[in-house]
Length: 397
Ligand SMILES: Cc1ncc(COP(=O)(O)O)c(C=O)c1O
Image (cartoon, rainbow, N blue to C red; front, side, top):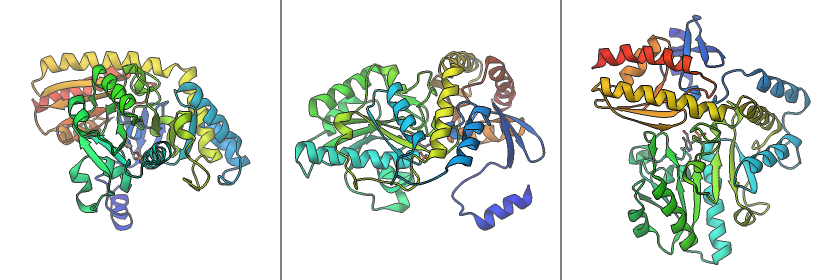
């Protein structure tokens, strides 16, 4: 393993604080490192492997497509892209899709779409500002980073693109004060993932929707992390009884193949015309075949329901832990997206101890653990994870 780590340091830019393990193989909710040690995966490649590692249905779809056609670009029509677009509009509020390659890229495109919408519909050159929430995360490219209201992430990359304003998450009063005639959109995660698994209230989202309707502002939901059953619903907006105008999705859609999508209502989507936005790779036949197969499994195995049920079981067990361990300050989440806030900055230490005991989790802050396992886990895997966590929490008390 030492050689791999040395080589990584020699040849790869040092942007990641990687954990000391080299993974070689996966199957369902299990991973194996190069020494054959087995791990239970409760991180699913940062919320990507929703249906489990190496699903035969996805492998088959990718292999068959790879033997037929991998890439021709968006100069032409390809069947998997059209089929996937149809499927995504059937399962969501949206009428139209634009295919990109990552979450950040989907958000970049959504920001462009919102700005063009304002210019076309209101004929107002000054209506370009986007409001986002502190602790939100929308990606690392420049406009997505400008929407990511986290000063430490923006620090070395200033000046940020102009036209972004920030408000406290889950505070509609502040939002009402900040919205003005320059505002064209609000971009928000229905549940903040990287920011600590923070959930806005039902009232907040209802007020957000009303405010956007009243002021004719577009509501963009960043469901890059929360989409596709992660929170116990197909999309997290369904929890709050409202519908956004634009939604961005990525992570779980193709179970590990890189994809990002902008979804929008017709009235919004129609402002994009040829030449406004493009990507060479986006929506290629290979990744779209993987996404169609992934969605097939998600539906066939009823994994959205499983996420809700197993997630509830897991959360309740963690609430019991909270009563037992002073270390735990708060447990929050929906479905299989759960955060545990600690009373001390012990999260990294706990992540490393879990890894040593064969459980892969991650921390989103020095005091917040995040659990985002594949949606195909059962209560048995939760029990195994809980046993490991219990011993570690006892040590850390
Ligand atoms: C809510 C949200 N938006 C956007 C992104 C960026 O996605 P990507 O890393 O695919 O660019 C992430 C990544 O964690 C995310 O959680």
